[in-house]
Length: 178
Image (cartoon, rainbow, N blue to C red; front, side):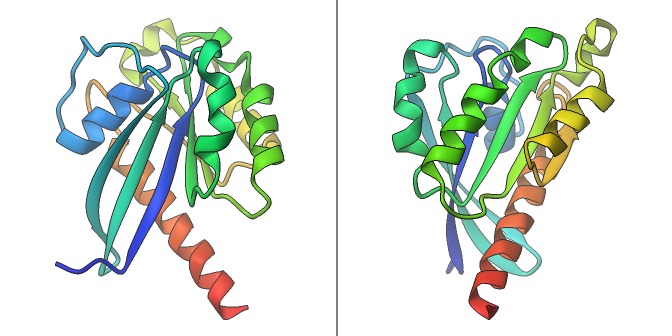
């Protein structure tokens, strides 16, 4: 099988937002609730077919703990797309959104497709972040997409990665035609 492209995707956001369970669900289609905390960054590969094109995704799941944030600038460099993740049941998971995006602005000098993702929709009864508030914030930060998902049920998980991959492909194709 030959791949037309390999893309680096970085998943970032505060700790305990569901970045690792999202990645695990996408890779294996299984939910694992006893995942240990990411130390620094975890790296994974997944091949997908999208719109007739075979694409390899390098997924960099970045630790959300503040003690690892100094590493983020070096991992974001060279990214083709990114997922910012927050927890819909924890308003505080948006507390550092400005810090994360400030690093992006400093390190990335090209149009980086970003999907804003609210995780844990299976816990809708505990929701603290309104969809409208999060969508407004995503728009304010220049995100290219917004999706709420559940790694537990699988709701919208593949949709996130498919959307981001389509945005990356569109971004790549617009650069080659200009």
